[in-house]
Length: 315
Image 1 (cartoon, helix red, strand yellow):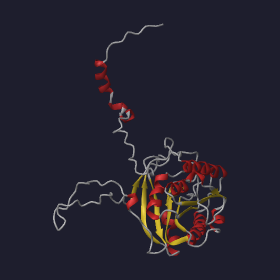
Image 2 (cartoon, rainbow, N blue to C red):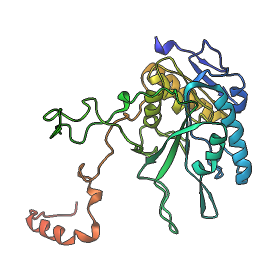
Image 3 (cartoon, rainbow, N blue to C red):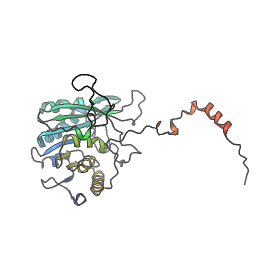
Image 4 (cartoon, rainbow, N blue to C red):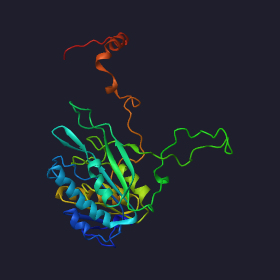
């Protein structure tokens, strides 16, 4: 059964889960040409987090280029590569990393299929520019003969009762009963303090984000590779849907966290946010923090008139 799957330390064709503790290039060198169906990762953004050494932008791009080149070598002809990135920030000036890295993918002959906007509501509050509330997933394929299955990631139709009003299909329902295409703007909460998936990693991405990629771009038993594994999110998403997962991580504490989360997923006890769960709406939920304090005085005064008088005494 799934909870008997062992976590391997090196890539072998017979493995189903691989967590390599060390530099990703060392892992990639052991992966055969064309073995991987999906490369999905979120690399360091070169902003000085504890798990990265900040480089000048030119050197960072060259470093990323070496990893991307090896990832492309391992990718199958029907495979996809998804690079999830944000902004490089230097003295308040931003550089969108997807645009900075695009020439690498283009020079390797990859074909861009989508630039997906991942929108979230929480993050750092900026005082001298608008606060950043999105990052991107740039999706490339190796050939035009790539695998893509929309059905597992369809979302509910906005107007399921809509019908054709003219033509040969007049009167018939016009929408797909399985749901609609989720489009290229994905509203998925990021992993912050109250998120069920939160660990001590400062830039953890949600399982649901990778699930969409796994379900639409791979088949069961395909390999999913994450060269910057972090706490194992990509492998969790892979094994959740009966795919094989491999990744590399250099920080021992995150390697340990990845092992723990993967084992919990294999045992069926890891808590994750459901992929299609609606985003929490505090107003619909009646959250009292939605009441504006400086606008509720008159309401409070009116409510006080309805309160029963209470006699207080010292004990």
